Amino acid sequence: MTSPEQRQRLLEWIAEAVRAGARRKPACRECGLDPRTIQRWARRATPIDRRTCVVKTPRNKLDEHTRQRVLAVANAPEYADLPPNQIVPKLADTGQYLVSESTMYRLLREARQLAYRQASRPRRHAAPQPVTATAPNRLYSWDITYLPLTVRGMYCFLYLFLDVYSRKIVGWQVYGAECAEHAAALLKDIVEREGVARDTLTVHADNGGPMKGATMLATMQRLGVVPSFSRPAVSDDNPYVESFFKTLKYAPVYPGRFTDIHAARAFTAEFVEWYNHRHQHSGIRYVTPAQRHAGEDVLILQRRQAVYERAKAAHPERWNNRPTRNWDPIREVHLNPEKAKTQPVAVAAAA
Image (cartoon, rainbow, N blue to C red):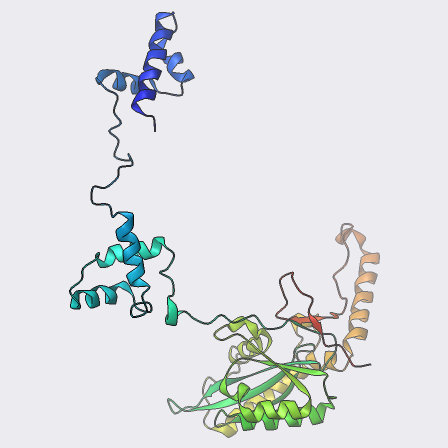
């Protein structure tokens, strides 16, 4: 916007240019103005800006003393954890009126005090420690999911441990309830069956009750297993086992509901056998989890690479000087990797 003084000066310059022989339109263009704007200014005795977007100071604007008083009351110990819609009525009960609710909301917003205040402020949780697996039986991810029964409101629960490196289901069981004792017994059986040495395995889970139960944590300490936990209410901190649960429940053979716990166990056993030994997993170069867990994926991928190289040699025009498909084995699998600040903690095979 231009002030009245600036407008008057521009009018004089343009008038002087016209008197010197210049045309009005080019003279206005040189000043960055439209000729109609100059005509409108010239018709008025004093060129006052009458546009609605003019910044004006409201007559009822609060002075600084009142603003600071409102903020002091809102931050007083008896009101610090209350919103304005509760502070204003409480002040009225004591015979005080400072400002309206909307004004108090505005003042708190301007002071950046409206998000969370005092006791209502949520706790901040750090992201879980990043972990890298370079061999089987070094990093497990586990969780529990509901398996609904045909009776509405009745469920059984699938406990499942997945090896993050190989994607193999190393252990599972279906129980009728969620408890840390069931999880601890299942983990103990997996560690013994897989021959996991002490202090070589990290087990990641969310913050559910069975995951942090005393029995489960004591069993992990006794077995030499390192616990790792997601942040509360963050679904993508435990992605591998959650991905399997989606594969399970979106499979065409998934019945939706089970007649009883025995039917749920029979279905899960058949599905896990298919997943481990016949399902070619996209995240591990389309080998089966069992093949990768046993170390057979390296030879399989080498044979695929040789097939592609022979095909390229026979028909190089199909590749147009581009490399063949990447069949290199995936050497590292990361869980909750840091963006680019710290190095992940390696949990490679023990020497």
